[in-house]
Structures are given as structure tokens and as C-alpha cells.
Image (cartoon, rainbow, N blue to C red; front, side):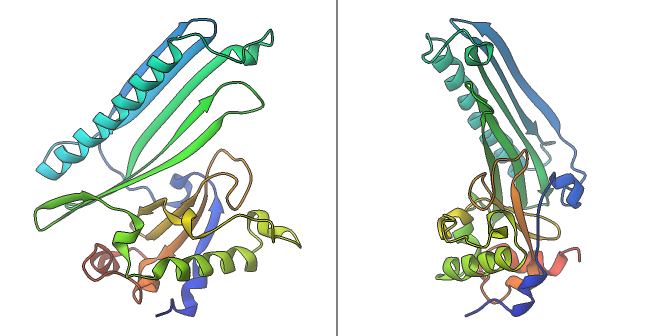
Length: 247
């Protein structure tokens, strides 16, 4: 079972999701946790997460899960930073420790919510580390679950999807694939796990240093839903999204 050749009308880029027209106008309240203190280093922590209007049990469930995990991250970081830190020095940048975490909904329907965010930590050096976050919740027949990419497709899809992603990057000279020799690139099927379900299609996100270097935004690849029909799990959310996708 193969993806159709028209898959190559997918779109890859590095820029904020809002500029891609992928974020719906979703009403929510931003919940903010922040603190700063000093031990033998200066510590700052900011955690921002959404609270959706609780008009259904589904949204209440998502709110509680997002809140629980955000609080756990915040508390764990504060506890870790509360003790004396190693690798400090006279240089000012070596004496700073920061956490910036944010999460926001990008797609919301009666039974499907996708959220996108990032976790940035700095502990000295030229720049910190950033991890891009994707979470998708789906309610089906009264059961709510957080989806993985494997839930969206039939078995054996991952290698096929990887081959098409890699071919796209090669054909369009994206990121590391702009070099004549890209045999050293470590991109593999295991790097396909970060995804969002949007109004236009499946958006795959790649962490820094997977297919390109460090940047403020992830490399993304948007695949319109109709082009995934041959590998979509008929018992997952994709068939319904194919009927309502914005082209």
C-alpha cells in the first residue's frame, strides 16, 4: 500500500504556525505560572498553558490533563533548581538557569483537540535547548484518548511515510539535504512522532538537528488529508477530517 505520487504537493518550511494559516481562532484562557529566585545561580521559570471553556466533558478532560502535566513540569523544575547547581563560573551566562514552556490549541472540534507548544531551557552556553511539543486528544464512542501517530494509520505505514518525507526533503533541498553529501543525516522513521491535526492536513514537526540545525521554530511538513487516504486507519479520526478539510 503506497502513498499517491500527489503527496509531493506537501509543503515544508520553518516558520511560526500562525503564518501558515494553520491555527484556528480558538477561545481559551491562558494560565500562567512564573517565579524567579537565586541559589548559586539566577533561576527563572515560566509555564503557560491553555484552559478551554468547559462546555463538554471532553474539554474538561483535556483541561485537567494539560493542567496536571504543566504543574508537574513546573514543580519538578523548581525542585531541581532549588539545590546548588554545578558548572557555574564568573561569566554571567553560566550563572543563569531558565525554563520557558508554552502550550496552545491549534485545532478544536467537538471531539478532537490538537495542541502545540515548546519547552525551552537554558543552562549556559551560546543558546539553550528547545523541545517542540504536540498533543492530540480524541473522543470516540464516549472514550477519550491521547493519540499517537500509530493510531492514525494502518500497520507498516511508518517506513512508507518516512521514505516520502525524506524524498521530499531531498527533492526540495530542505535543511541538511541542501548539501551534495547528506549521507550523514540521522533522520529516521523514529522521528515522525511529533504531529498536529489541523484544518488543512497532517502537520509533521521535526525537532532541531533532525533534518536541519537549531532554529526558533521547528521544521514542518504539511500533508493534505486526502493524500493520506490509502494508509489511514479507518477506525481513527482521519476519515472524518478528510471530509471537512480546508483546501
